Amino acid sequence: MGKFLVFVKSVLIGSVVGGGPFMPLTLFLASYPTAAANGRSPTDDVMHALQLAVLPLVIAFVIVLSASVLIGLPLTYLFRRKGLTGPGPYLVSGILVGVAIPIIMPWAMGWSGMAWMAIPGALSGAATARVWWGATRVRAGGVTPSCEPR
Image 1 (cartoon, rainbow, N blue to C red):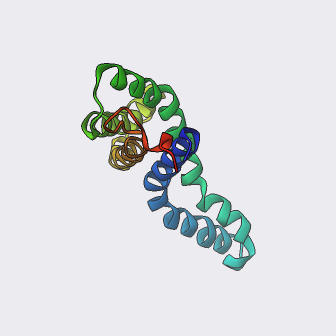
Image 2: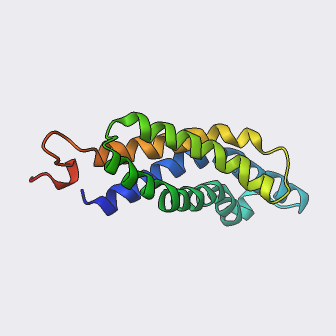
């Protein structure tokens, strides 16, 4: 698998880990209360409910992609130059970035009470980092799995 596809895979898995657990809640909130308040059946708003249900994945995807490009790729370059090819540096940095973003971003916007989002952020960061490291790690002889002959 090429490095671009590995990158996409790691971002998608991190997005699902970070945003997926919120989908049942947003589906419920999108369909039932809205439809009941308007006197309609919940099935009338199926498309609206589905759009809102996937909203956590979309938000997580944007955050994970941005963090992966702006922080993860430069860190990968730095780790390679320093010879840090084990999973530890990747996982620790993924967890730290995953914790920092949901704490710093709302704080910078003047929001409060969002620190609990550091938990799914840490899980998402760890998942993204683990998939990225696992697919791009340097093996003996300097060969990465995505560069090995098939």
